[in-house]
Image (tube, rainbow, N blue to C red; front, side, top):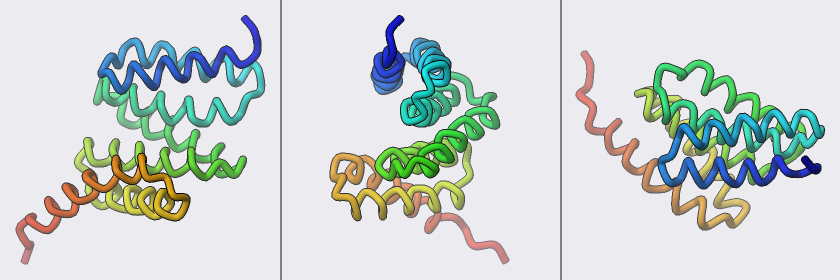
Length: 148
């Protein structure tokens, strides 16, 4: 296979995730990460890891710890490479993971970080994806009964 084929696997994995075909997404994204590492394509590895962690958890919630670690690895690489748009998307995906796992405080922190970065960079598409999640989560936190 030629260099940058890993990008094709990332796109396939992202699309399969959006379509809800999580098993196919995980397969494509694992190949993306593997090929990215072999080709030393750190940028593709980073976003591939973020997407892989997302798809893993959506396919099987028992993979929570591994999915979280995979997303965090992707975020670390994004940070090292200065890939702010991908880092912001990673914060969104991590926030979604935390929300799905019932970790509202951690989720709010990540979603607020993503929202701020998307706004600062003028990434309206991603901002529109983040805001409803953030509003829903904030509303559920505000409705929670107070403990004495």
